[in-house]
Length: 125
Image 1 (tube, one colour):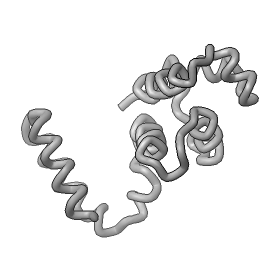
Image 2 (cartoon, rainbow, N blue to C red; image 1 turned 135 degrees about the vertical axis):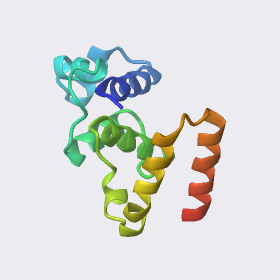
Image 3 (cartoon, rainbow, N blue to C red; image 1 turned 90 degrees about the horizontal axis):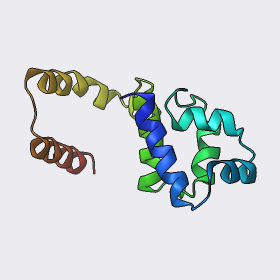
């Protein structure tokens, strides 16, 4: 996943606020040039969690909501990282190589991938 994916997410969330990029940045104390570079995928997502939290809050994401988690997950994936909460779970880390080998072994149809995701969710609930 690239910085472009994170940028598209940021842009769509900002547009959902109904504000232009300049107005959004001025209201929230963000540099419009840097924010524009984030939205266009020129800059990678910030690594610092406090900066991501400022963006998420300004974009109207509720702390702990699915959208909040997705925002942080997409940021991590766009940087080529696992989300922090998952990378500290030893049980999960032991299983990831099997998942990676499975995904590399064949083209997984979208419906099968959705099924796999649902099974993983049920197993971790």
